[in-house]
Image 1 (cartoon, rainbow, N blue to C red):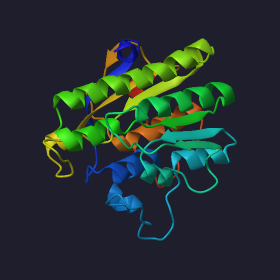
Image 2 (cartoon, rainbow, N blue to C red):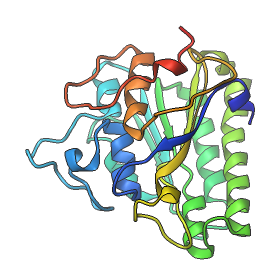
Image 3 (tube, rainbow, N blue to C red):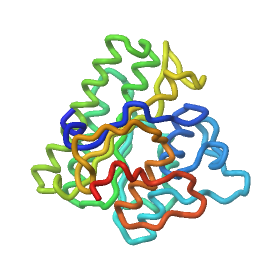
Image 4 (tube, rainbow, N blue to C red):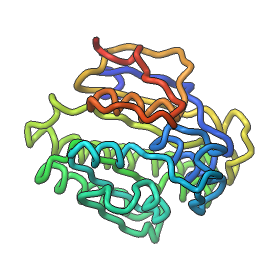
Length: 244
């Protein structure tokens, strides 16, 4: 809520079809829908032309910027092509009601403040795992959200203590929603997700009515980093979110 108050918020951003985790996150990082980047399930697949679409990590690395990724769902290793990451941390979730998200947050906080990468991806996967076990909107689901919020707060506090908060742009995003024990059908509960941006270069206290899509996130981050957008990308810069 502090990030929302100090930034911009869209409560009805749109996921992509199929609303499944790896296709969604590749759409986030590659700014293309699944039918273009080629991955339609949780196994990475080359696009039809046989050439991977450049992702946000690839662009940052090619520009000489530091990159880092911290996650607890192993398939997210495929968000960066080999050689595009300077640092990465993976920790298997194990017990979804345990502290896997907090461990990822602690690793991210330590590495980000010590090495200050220009682009860092931090993923907390327990909310999704708990939802599959106990249902979306169940009591354990909301408890997992509270723990994810705590994990975000841990990273933010470390960066503030290191004097990095004022110069950093923070995005808090979800890949998909869900209903019952599942997702992937393309219903509204699957497709409507929140999007938050806050910090350097972002307007303050503004609500975006939409439309905002997962494929728009990478162009917006690339713009803030001063990177040229690849011709293959189909998303747009979310100009309404920018301070200038």
